Length: 99
Image 1 (cartoon, rainbow, N blue to C red):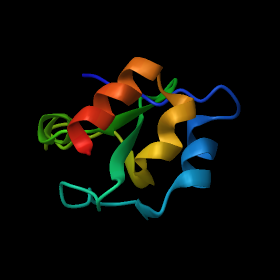
Image 2: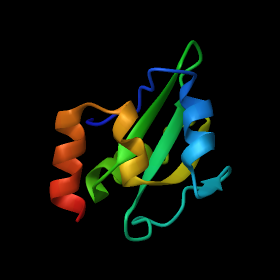
Image 3: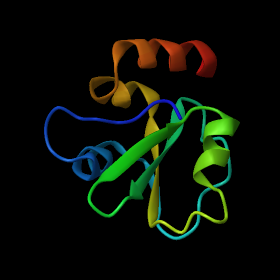
Image 4: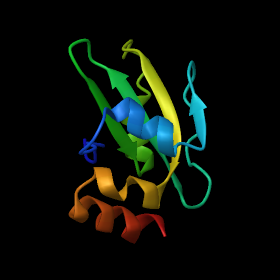
């Protein structure tokens, strides 16, 4: 799997709370966020959380496998607001396929 959110200040949860336009607590949203937005899945792995960016249908499918029972919270966020928390290469890659 590909692109993960790693803010330089604060937690992933704090960063996503600050920039999200919609939050989905119990069920994943439909694939494909609104134009200019991406879905981010915050996964509770027990000892740590991971925030994966669903920039493609394949990435979305990886986070919605029915046998994965980990707790998840979904965020819809503006792509440009993710820039400080992902690598420049990942940001450029997502820009090239999402715009």
